[in-house]
Image (cartoon, rainbow, N blue to C red):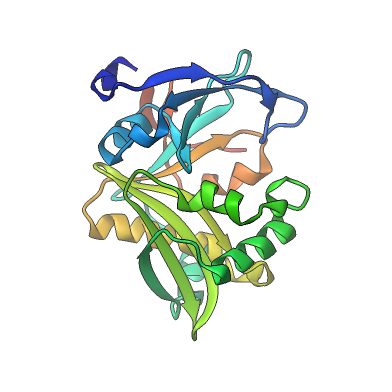
Length: 240
């Protein structure tokens, strides 16, 4: 944390808890406190060090015997979509996108609940109430944009994205689970890559890639990714 010593943040290790990515493993996090002090400038530096945020909770994995969580980002100028991705982009070309400040909206929350029940049943988040949803997605001390995707006026997808000095950081996305065949998730990442290009920002941070974790496998589609390994960002082709 010497790189951001001017921020007066302190880092603490959390207690062990069940890993959300790999079954039968315990995880531990390094947490930056107080989270309210993590503004856009500080968070940009923390992202470069492999941190992520969930609401005001800013953390990075710090497990005792595992280093499977690899921070990854897309170098947007080097990325070229493949044929499948181009088709997903064309399929959703009629989507209207509105950029808003993060706020609670009952329509968004209803879509979030349907998405969690269909895609992550039994994972805990499928029982989130309004307060937990707000703490997870709406609460932010950084520059956060809420992207609302509609098709002919019908809400299809909501995505939360942070903006920092060197890029965009994908926080979380949820979409209509009945439209899985429309590749909305792929379209969303491609839209964020294009947006970063328009803003002349070099990176789109995608969080962690975890080998052997099915829920993280989609990040392998955006090759070559830059991975933070042994404290250094490096371009790498990853496979599951």
